[in-house]
Every structure is written in C-alpha cells, then in structure tokens.
Image (cartoon, rainbow, N blue to C red; front, top):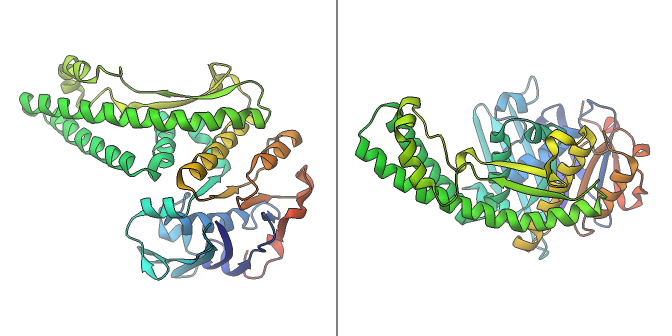
Length: 355
C-alpha cells in the first residue's frame, strides 16, 4: 500500500498544504526545526487512516486557530493496484471520514483495509506509565481481529454491569450470575490475547536481534487473574468486592512487559534502550499485520534520530521491509546514518501554507 498524495486545510498549523509522493521512492523524510509542523503532517496521515487523531479527541485542538473547519485528504494505491481516496472533515463538534465517497461506518474494517503502524515519542509513556496504557496498546494492536473486538466488547459490558451491581449492593444471586458470565468472557478474552501475542512475540524477538538489541527481548503478558481460576476467585472475592464496589481481578487488569534477558526492561534499560525496544515492537507489529492482512502497512517514525545512536538508527532503517512506504521526520538529514537516496526529502520549513 502506498500513499500518493496528501492535502490538508486548516489542520493544526497548516493553512493549505498539497504534497505528492514520488512512486519510485521507498518513502519520505520530513526535515525541519522543531515546531515547524513535521509531526502535524504525520498526524494528518494517521487521522485519515484511523478516522481519528492519535493526539487529540477535541476538534478545536485540531482546527487551525481562527478557522471554523478543517479538511484532510489523501489518495493511495493498495497492494492490488486499486486506487482509493480518503477524506476527513472537522466542523464544530462534528467529524466525518469518507472512503471513496462513502461515509465510514466502523473503524475495524478501515484498520484492516488500510493498515498503518506509527511511532511517536509521546507513546513511550505507555511503556513507563500505568498498565492501562499498555492494555490500550494491546487492544488497539489486536483490533484488526473481529473475534477479539467482539470478545473485548462483551467482556467490558459484563464488567460494567457487575461493577454497577457491586457498587449499588445489588442482589447477591444476580452478582453470582454475572460473575460466572464474566469469568467465561474473561478467560476467552485472555486466550485470544495470549494467542495473538505469542505470534507477535515471534516477530518481536527476531526484530530485536535485527536491531542489535543489548540482549534477547521478549513480550510477556500478565493476565490480571489466575488463568483457569477466574470463576472460583470471583466467588471467593465477592464479599470484598462488594465493599470496594468494583471487580478486582480479570483481563481488564492485564499488563504487558518487555523483557530484556528475562527481566522487565522498564527497571533495567536506559531511556535510549527503551525507545529502541518500543520501535522494535512497532516494527514487529508491522510484520505481524503484513502476514495476517496480506497488505503492506504504511510506517511512520516521528523524530527517529532522538536518543538513539547511529548504529541503532541504521539498523532500524534496514529492518523496515522494502515494500513498506516509510515516513520519517528529523531535524536534520545529517543525523541519519544512512544514505537517503531512496527517500524523498521534504523541507517542511520551506513549504508554503504551513507555519
């Protein structure tokens, strides 16, 4: 899959922008000082291919100051050669995504049809912060699978209802019924997570070696409950949970660890190493999607030259599949330890209509 053109009007600091991407190049380097709008261009691509921004849910933060509406558009060719147009508009509190002129009904099919993998530095907080951030990463990654989405929705509906019963001191027999249903749904959701994560981990281990990581890196899923014992444990904890007003075990409390030589890297790896491991995870997701979807994802790497040594940056570039269109941003091409002849360079601070 390859993006051939991008347009933006009144989006972030962009007044009016039209870009065409050369088909003979593997990808694009957006170059310019911090603050000129490199990340905003990349955000525009994400917004178009996801139906929403990864940075903000508020329209007024996306619409350029002084404007009342914003428009984005791109054209792309999928791996079969078919051309598509995606449009995105913002006005007031309304937003609309259209694919080939038809309004988007759901994001799951869009993610499957137009796969995208992106790395932005602010995402690193998901590896350092609360487990909920890493659960969100898991759920978004596996959102390409309809069975996973259905299992996740079913579990969370049951969880919400059970928590309401616990909080409101509801009927004990009804709590028991919900406990049984929640346990079944929770065990099933965990099985799907484990199955898909095991496959993703195969790509992650190989990618870590390709990037010359300082030791073997692996993914470990912490379930959030005793697997196979959720029903029994919910029964045992029901009185305590009635006092707390919430469910204290289950896959809604799962966590994801990146292990370095069998130990959690959050506590042992440097900032640069954690960035390397996270980029390795994104590359593994790209290869995972490529195999599952039989469509080559777009890859975005924002500010890739920060906090990484030249050897790691070169290894990352060489690990990107050559049929995957790549978008990189950097403050200077001199920070990239590889020859960028196969990449189209765009000096963002020289573009009219942005800033």
